[in-house]
Image (cartoon, rainbow, N blue to C red; front, side, top):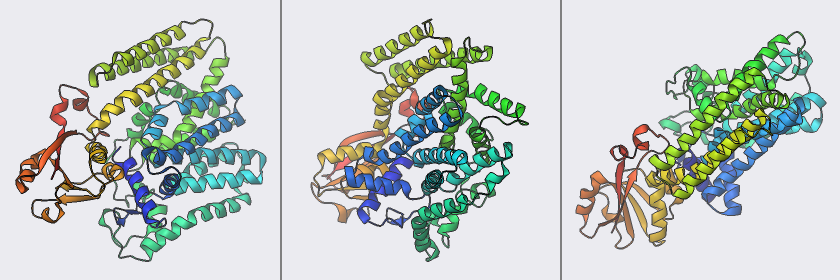
Length: 529
């Protein structure tokens, strides 16, 4: 999907062909935004499997699987086996995880490495084993190589408050931390050298947003993260104070109804036992204080909280594990059980809406949703299983059904409106390898360049198009408003297909309404000469 995922896949493709892995470039220009690990791993995957959308996703998804396993191992250190399994299950079945493995950005890999580092550092904190501090440092280094200092901020914050809460002052001063710093520095060295060579050695280089005299090292280690709080960064979308709060509420579905009481009781328990500390506060402090830190940023997007979802899963899993093993369930749990049932019913109604109104589906898919709903109702009233167990199974059934509907039906229909990728796939079927594609008065789009086998020339107009026209070998993509101009250039230029376009990552009510959709669509036409 445009913008980020297709951009990273395209940068990786261009890096793969250029063989230049230290200086990150995009379309021949300096790219100074994200660290290079996602590009390096995608290049490795391209080398092994070829250039495909799934081979771009694969390394990040494998890393997230490691993160889910790390949730289980971390929770098992401090809670019972059942709670650990539930925590991993929650992390594997929340909307954020679905989105992270579908629209793969840097947050997918970041989430996996952060949770892996937390698990290994927690093991080290208990056993002081050499291997755990090394693996923990590797996790931190790779997290920073994925998305910058936030990969260090999360574990440092989480463990600092753990030590303060338990008054383990000596844990702040262990010689093994020096070893960890060396490991992290070694991991970051190739990227740091590349940044220095690309920017610091060449201050005349033009970087992001046409900036000159930019230090690549300062940008990565300070401006891109902390500069969004201090105001040094140019990124500012004026988010409302609770933007990340309501973003997290939907991204942690379908478990948010249980997370809220879980967080409340976890904080309450830690306050009550402050004189005699019990359990861990790594998950609570890591979630709360980093969440507050992220909320101070002047530029925020919903996926900024994704690396905190594993901690939220552990908080929720420990709460659910306690209540599932407790019979009968607590009164508070029963209240939120009712809220959860209501939320699942709403999700089913949403699925019926998507498949019967937004994008009408076959009777097969409607029947599948109906059977899933009936099974959900059956589980709710199946008395052999205790109430908490019933809602756990029912929630998973609902989420699996939702993910299936989104994968098989919703996104398949939605991406037909992403003209850039749709054109590329059509061109690949109809065009000879020696043909070319011209974009008239417009920008091709990252997904078009990623998928298209032809060379693409952008911002062609009626004055400079002449040298690019080759009889029988030229395709032209233009907005419908330019169609008359294009056909006047040469009488042999003919329209072969038209496309309805929409920014698919910015859904709104008008687009989702079949009756209002036409009014928010752009029209593009593919011509052939």
